[in-house]
Amino acid sequence: MQKSNKSIAGYHLSMILSSVDGEFAPEEGMMIQQYLAEEFPFRMNLDNELEILALLRPEEWKDHFEFHARCFYDDSTEEERKKFVQFSKSLIKADHKVTDEEHTFYKLLKNMWHLE
Image (cartoon, rainbow, N blue to C red; front, side, top):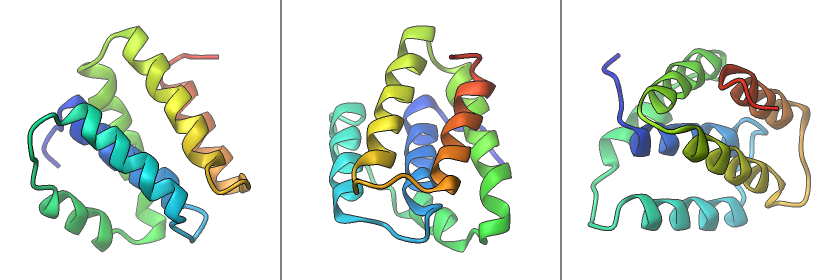
């Protein structure tokens, strides 16, 4: 898999976080749209990225998530990582329930980035 830049990696991380509970809530979609607007001030075609995500089987999500967490880490500052973790926390709470799967992936991200 080809290394992603911070913004693309953040998109992959967000999409997986919002999907691991088996439901992509409209509130989560709105938050991801806001993330995209902030990260991509110009129009960006993410069709290829969405296709990659759509083809993943649930058992592949963890490895894909870890790969993009490393890409984001390599391309970001500690402050950017802290900001993204806060965004991730809000994202998994957006539908007013946090599942074990969402919490597991959120904790994985924090652990990989050495944030507590």
